[in-house]
Image 1 (cartoon, one colour):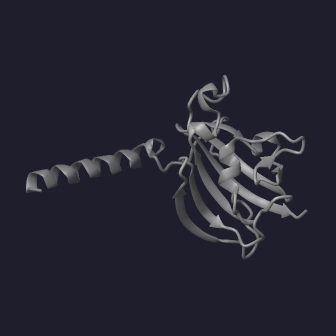
Image 2: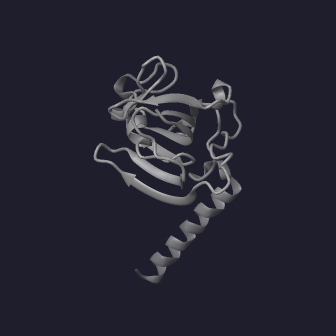
Length: 181
């Protein structure tokens, strides 16, 4: 790399940083806006005293699901037969929030871990496969970011008026509590 190329690279980098400083909403690290136009709710709001440690371990599964442990919980690990409570925010790739536990009164979503490890609602309905695969192995008090490819989400059909076809979804989830069998 010669001095001219290095100078150009430095100038471009400084310009990008300056743009994100002047227009923070353009930054890929900016908080995603909620459907109501404000910042999304903080999922890790109330970590119990001594709960979890910050990490930032990201793994990608063979089917393309990206799982990042933002906080590793210190409670029990969810297992088949458990009833779990999860707070969440669901976002499209552009940061648009399409669903959250706050949009449903702020109460955590109550789910049952089926014998095969999948998550079910109390009426027996299943969730998208990315959720079941993404929360497997979580400990109570933990938070994760799940980046769910279309095949593990709503696929080519999407959800008309809410989630476009072939959308990659990002969920921030917090495992609030686990009640055993």
